[in-house]
Amino acid sequence: MGTLYLVSTPIGNLEDITIRATKALTDADMILSEDTRRTGLLLRELKIRRAQHLVRFDEQMEQNGTPQVMEWLDEGKTVALVSDAGTPLISDPGFVLVREAIKRGIPVVSIPGPSAILAALTSSGLPPQPFMFLGYPPEKQSHRTKLFGNLFQCFKTLEQNPTIIFYCAPHKLIQTLLDMKEVFGDIAIVVARELTKVHEELWRGKISEAITYFQIPKGEFVLLFRIVKSLTP
Image 1 (cartoon, helix red, strand yellow):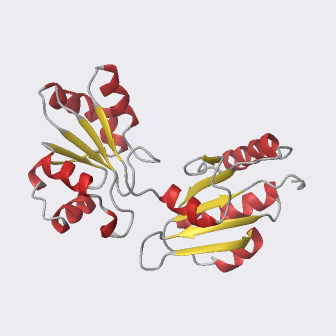
Image 2 (cartoon, helix red, strand yellow):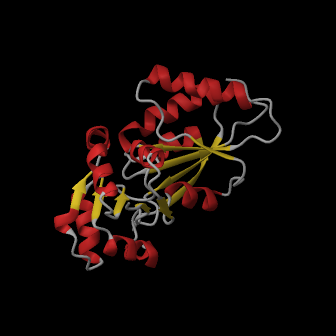
């Protein structure tokens, strides 16, 4: 029986790769990758010759390809799963695969490393605990505002509200901020952009100011905020 490794990879700066992650990728019989082109570049930078064992494993492939991966693991192969960047399974494919491996008694080993969530949280200036990570907001505006409304109702009267964290794609940023302002009011937020990359930025201010500042959003975003007790939607 083989082992399934969940290998965290850099979210921007290649120097964030760990020694253990490099070894796992070097030793793996098969590497499952959400984006084989991006992972191929990483492997070349690390001088790891695994192109012939690099297999695409995005959301669609996870649904159809998990049985094949289970066969490899049953045969005793070592399989490493990497996402596009950062820690696998966090708003990325892998949960179905991990759940099936555990069901079959196959060892699952997580190799920790870069995470945009923790990088943004620890440098945000907001309380690091408790915090709540909710991935990407829903695509549909009605679903998004409903989620925000539920959060407001849950936390508007609490003394110790969690720091809430969302990922956000650039083309959704402005509308998401507008929806947040409508529900939460003009609260203070932190916007982290392009973490660990050349144009890394941590911006702090009111939602209305963020809407003005990020008129032409570029890069990947992390939004962090707390629901203020005294506000009304």
